[in-house]
Image 1 (cartoon, chains in turn cyan, brown):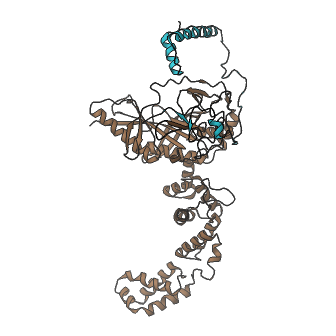
Image 2 (image 1 turned 90 degrees about the horizontal axis):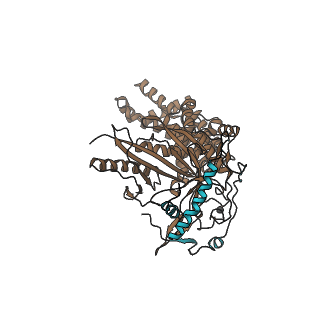
Image 3 (image 1 turned 135 degrees about the vertical axis):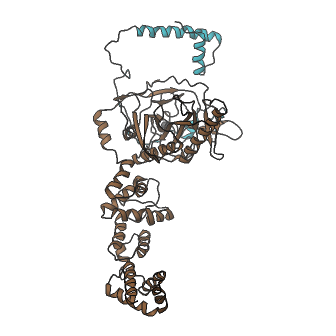
Length: 96
Length: 492
Ligand SMILES: [Zn+2]
């Protein structure tokens, strides 16, 4: 079943992407092709194959709990479009 | 009005007491200048790769075991996707699914006014905290990412909920906090946001099987507020239903000043988190031997300690409760018992004068050479050995109880050996000495003696007081009392 234009619109909204009607249609075609590929994968017989939690055969890759200095504040804020008083400025958020 | 039943599910978020963050090594601390404990990983910069904190995982494992949870053999981290400025990556690393979290299907026994109660735990999982949004004067919002990526443990109660009253809600949170502090995994400072509680509350008519619509309550920063907020919501919802209305499923905030809840606007209208396993993090694997070793290494938990203090030391539930409230306090008590103290006497000193002096001086009870105070308070000079010495001076009649308070206070302030303070002023229990002192007082106070003999026993205290005065308080008071009564009654 092909993906509907409304579904593409919904996914775009969740990803905070503002798309034109033309772009939506283009993504519809691309996503359709992508999902088609997953249908191919689903057709593979995996009877008797244990599910793996990750593609890489590694586990418990952990770091010791020792604090280290990261970036200076100036470095941290260097790429921010706007900053003030050491804070990243963002559009106004009002919760209450 | 119909009868209603309350159901409360509880989500508790606890910031873990690690040195560094969950997936990077930025320092974990409270306060400080904004954006000074950040790095490419916790700022979500492209290409940065997370590495989980071993200690944080151990802390959650300990908590899961203490809460009687199952621990999976394999566990993965998921991405919970949503857009909000406090989340620089566009997703929060968390743990999803029923049997994937580090702990699942456990319980906590709490004691309530109606006796012990089992509160089912659905899961204990590990995630990362978000940054903090500050509303700036003159509009706009600013974000501080110092808190972003701090290891955060979420503990969620079972569904359907076991908590059925505001009192149980408060007790659950209080006893969970005590457990986390005992385990050393969280500092439990609710006022600093280290422990955050979100009850979801619903009511239903007593004869109804299905749960009512729930509301979620946020911003509860104390046990008291958990109690008040839950009770407020219970009443509010009943009032809505009684007037023919329906309860709306919504998120409400708690206003501490007005002690009432208010409707909050939620972050996203419809939550669609699109969880999926985080490809940047490899799975966790819990060897059964490691799990059992962690279980064996758990400290004695508060409820077990509370019971043991009553069974082993014959202490009352109230005494045991006071002693076990905080782990360092309980361990101080145990050190004093090991030093040869009588448990009841040690308990009385600790919960009496010692607790008072600590409060007055702002110091902490610390076992010398064993531990330091996590709050950074100055350690008191009083050691378990000194307390035991004072208690023994009283027990063997060397000093009076009244004198002992003085000695205790002096030892508290100086840390000196109590024995050296009582030289030459020890209590006198010599029978002949006391007999003579009593006889002298009787001879010198004919009027009170006559009053006593006319049947007014109340004057006895005055006469005993005279003996104590004469002996500079050193005569053994019970012996004086007995001898005084004997002599007065004998010669009358
Ligand atoms: Zn960092």
